[in-house]
Figure 1 (cartoon, rainbow, N blue to C red):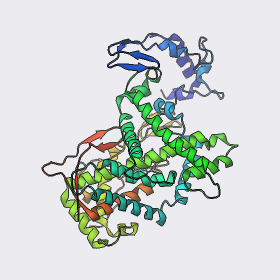
Figure 2 (figure 1 turned 180 degrees about the vertical axis):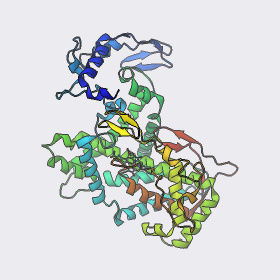
Figure 3 (figure 1 turned 90 degrees about the horizontal axis):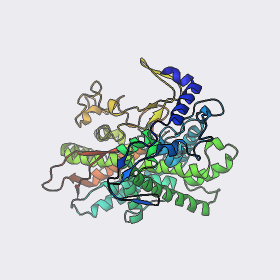
Figure 4 (figure 1 turned 180 degrees about the horizontal axis):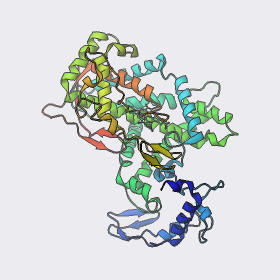
Length: 476
Ligand code: HEM
């Protein structure tokens, strides 16, 4: 099989034989499981549906010479094999190979460099961003206080608070916790990330030509994403309307300036469509991950009240009640730091990491992975590695403490992955986790609602997150 990567013409001929051979032209009959609308047609539940593969394999819009045997359909101008579908068809159809998270090569390099530089210019790793997170923590605490110690589900409000930090960096604004439009958007986002881990998206990635034409929950997912992308497009339009290049307010403004500078180099991706998708990537990656981790954090605290008490004792000793936590405190709070690391390890929020592709034939141990193979750097295998952790399946902050109670780093702690594609927001996420988590435990003791046995049940989509649960936030 390793030869295939070096034989583009043969590979193209085999693909063209399959296309023209068209051996199952009418596919397998299926029945609709509920009343369904498909384009302009209404199909009642139980209708027999036959995805007609001939219609795609010979589609005049897809193929240059649909009725001729032409291996050129699968070769580019340099004679390299090109898949008709991008590496993951679902995301290719949705965002057309744009953005930061799923692109590769020259465009990705330019975009990653620009995003990192711009986030730094707007405060990443600096005091100004620390102050914004402290302010947001204050509002988050106020909102929790308004619950008056009664049971509530913390997910949405955590989501809103965390999202406000990346929103300030990319959109230049935060959204009130009472903004029902923004809360609806956050709900859509959580549901989209859940549905994206479903079997339907896997089917889409395996049989894209069929799935593009059949009904199913993947349609709902496209609608969700389109609404989220429309929100970003609207924000970009607002920025363009009152843009002042001499006073950039945020990532979008800086990108607009960059578009002028790079207009002769189209491959670098500084165009308006890519602006929308890169902003979307930063907004999504910066919202869901950190808030899910904090959500696990509170759930672990109500499951392990002794650890919660120890964190509070450390907060009282190092910070007290008269000022908010700051990043300089972390070095003096090894137990709290260890608890946050353990929450990230057990929370394991991206168990399968992000799918990547080998860009050349690669040797890994004794295996040869041909160029173009999908690779998943499965994080769960390190975060729960029995040869690395003393009690891999138990919540144990001791994993990150030495015999004297000092914080100790562990090599196998890699929730942000590693290498060139390591999480771009790691520094921001770590700052948010420490400041939000510590400020919450400074002001509240969290407990399960009276008479409720807390559990650690989860649901798995793209992210591994707690099943909705309620807690009580009792002011200290
Ligand atoms: C606890 C919080 C977070 C966790 C656990 C996390 C984890 C990850 C992981 C595992 C990846 C994939 C790395 C790979 O492909 O090897 C990733 C990529 C990425 N993350 Fe995060 N992340 C977090 C927070 C954030 C935040 C706050 C941002 C906001 C800037 C962010 C932005 C990104 C971006 C843009 C990428 C794509 C990087 C690239 O492909 O070059 N992440 N993250």
